[in-house]
Image 1 (cartoon, rainbow, N blue to C red):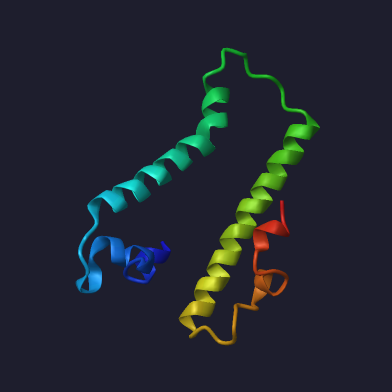
Image 2: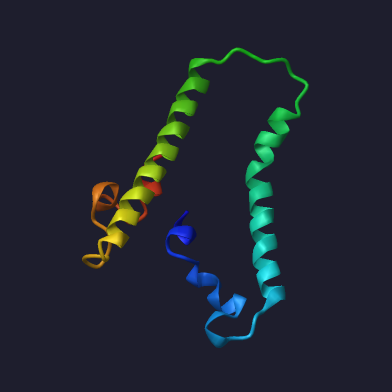
Length: 113
């Protein structure tokens, strides 16, 4: 979403050869594969759970508690991303975003589960 909104991702400009540079397809392939490996690694626990032969157990209060914390973390990340995008559109006033969740920490995900 962010790359689409900003009409590109400047982190890949050099690798893609934008701005008159030489394209580096092997380096871009390495970036692509590292990202694919990361996605696979992060999704591995869910793949193991979904491939299990265990019948559906009943959820305990512990399970619901962790589900609520997870949902709160995802919601917090969405809100923080939107707040920072609005700050960037307004012209990046100040040294760093101090709106909403960002006034508590630059690394908002370390403040929330």
